[in-house]
Image 1 (cartoon, rainbow, N blue to C red):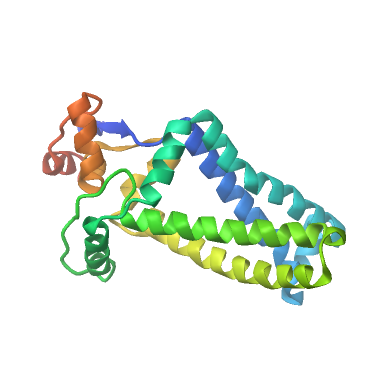
Image 2 (cartoon, helix red, strand yellow):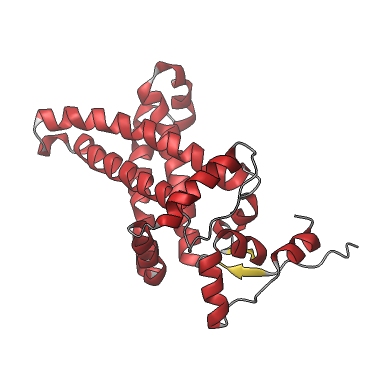
Length: 235
């Protein structure tokens, strides 16, 4: 039996966010897979998996609808968290620019220092903004492609163009997001946040210091010692 102390955890995300994030991720992956045989003959074998071209198109449209749902899930069931996210996306300070300098050092394995961040760090803000841009591009262009009879021919043609651009950009953003959130060593402890909403207290304090310190003042979080917690968990 291990004598290792149980980690002190704090809630970072609501259940509504966890569900919305899961629906978003599953929908995006499904949209990508069902779209592949429509873009190139290399993936025609997937039609057999989906039951033919018509079924692939039907599935693509179904997941296009579920792709829109996460925003409403989060907004309806956790409006406080949703509007905090929106507020932070338009709030940029000197610390956010400093974050990128240190982040670049961290990315290349150089010595770096943590820049105090709020609930969402500058990298998460950029990721969110890019995802919003991609989603708007994909949804708007997809709508013209789905209902071409209601739009001028030129609009539909441009819809195909922007759908392709949005498709490629969104995939690149998703890859970067997965790597930085789930694979990069300094971010991995925070992955639990999108699974059950909770993260190690030491990680939250280390990576989102301003937010953590505010919660400590409110009496919501324990004022943990980062180095002590790391030693306990072997982090």
